[in-house]
Image (cartoon, rainbow, N blue to C red; front, side, top):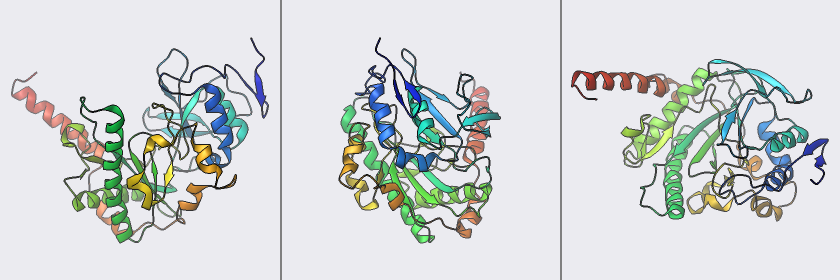
Length: 335
């Protein structure tokens, strides 16, 4: 067995093994990509509780929040409340190249930071909408279906931008690395979490009203009617995949920032761990499109907050609706 490589004091092993089925990349490709992109991805991750999606050989991908027991003593961590498991979790914090390389060696492919820094859960730094296009029909061609789904989500993203512009709030956009789109509004830290949640619901509701044939806020999938879901739940303890993060998707695609003017013509499959460093090479080693595209942090529009307070929380509304429908089925004698 060849000796393990070492970078920044981190021993790297099994670098030439395939990353996952359909990745078109090895573990070395993942490590090399994250190392080359460390100057861009670390500012997105720094200071934030981090969840990662790991892909171990012979196992299905899984999301890991808690730092494993075998993690080195030098690995920075932060305690934070995990909304999904309703418990306190000791999350890793990726502030430096050594930590990033250690996570890459653990086959951590995806990087999902919290929307707040440290344990300041009530001081979100971004308002985010996650635009999720409908699943393609089973008969659709795989490659063409992904592109069609993405461009449908891109059209819905323009509705979100229109709403934000009307409220005096500037935004940036990126691919999710899959078939969806993320719209991000940096905040100045003066808005509390509850207000950001309310404003996000209002933005989604206003965008839906602009084109109800294209976009929906229906949380229950069966109610979406083949429309783009404007997910307004990316706040509170939720996470979003980081800009520049690889995804466990065919080709190991990357969540990639785009100018608004380029969104409708983009193909999310063009940005992968193999291609992104080359796409950025012409702009120079210090070029950071996401940094340049992000507007300055802003104050939350009070009109959005006021409207959003009148809109039920999607998960809670969906839970009550699910119970109502289950009761109706029982009373009708349906299975």
